[in-house]
Length: 304
Image (cartoon, rainbow, N blue to C red):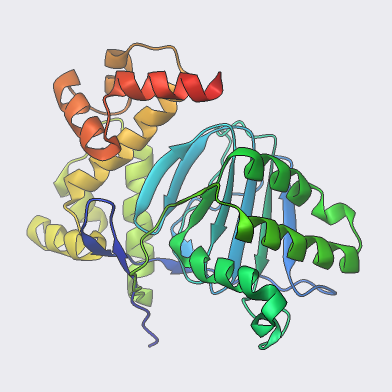
């Protein structure tokens, strides 16, 4: 059995190990890379935790949703432009609730133009971009706006023009300083086939039930383990206790509500699965570095 190991360093200093499902990317006749555009947000359904050897660039036009890349979880609003390196685990970024106008996914092998092509001195900046992409990059500002528009219309070009435009897009991203790192540089990745279904079932249960109390007995049963065995298994898998992982997921959901809803802090607290405002404020500040009210004020400044 082939085993990959990915250790991801969290923003709060811990190293964690994640396991994910391998996704085989289909090949496309007549092109060395693929460009898929989804005008219907319901069409691109890939919420599960997965990875693939291809590099992936995703432009999301408008809307807001959750990002889960490597060991990073956060919320994006007003669209996103993400570049993910080879074998970096991630979940799908859009669903029927995202509210985006469209999503464009570009995927290619690192050597899609040949093993020595990126070694040319004129392409050094792009080569460095590809190396940085393993960190999980999110672009913002004018870069996201201008490059995103170009990505949106890639499929309107013929094969040759599309390739030239893609290289130009890569160069624009390579020289841009408008990006943030979503994943840590030191990572390893451990994937074992027998764990795939188990992990997907656990994550699915979290996604569908995070607004209610999640009993350890329930998820242990899903994993076909005893509670002590499950706790050890999940902590080894994710680098953190199950309860902490669920609370981080709830905080990311709260970020979405704070950005989009006019509900009170207490209402968002309960809708996100927390049972009292005190704990909500505590976990929210621990994970985001600011209080829910401060986060909402900052989002309003960005939108305005």
